[in-house]
Image (cartoon, rainbow, N blue to C red):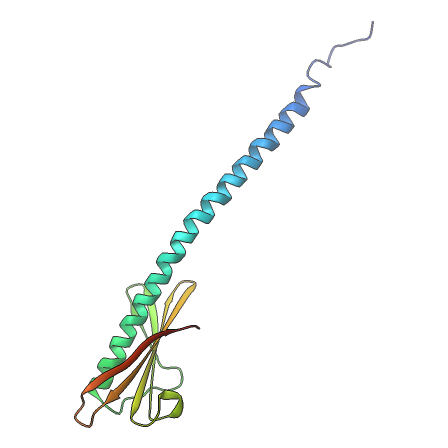
Length: 141
């Protein structure tokens, strides 16, 4: 008769390892699924916040042009915070890439963490300071 002392738990170890692996796979899959669901909604929210910041930038650029009809910015534009987001505004006028002579282009790039949304507005400014928006469009960045 062979000695069976110490061999009673020999089948428990593989069983525990297999069950532990299955439970770990289920937990990882569930965590990944929840992360993807949450991040997709969060990404939409960030994108909407970036668009709202870009709209605020367009309004600010229009306000600066209303105060000074010859207002332009340097190449990099200017940046200001909108809540806890940021927007960069670039204003150019009387150049072919700005819509042509007599036109002013306001470009606003709204940033919300990893999301960016860009809006462009083409304005006409009368000699009396009246501003008319010819177009407002989102451009891909």
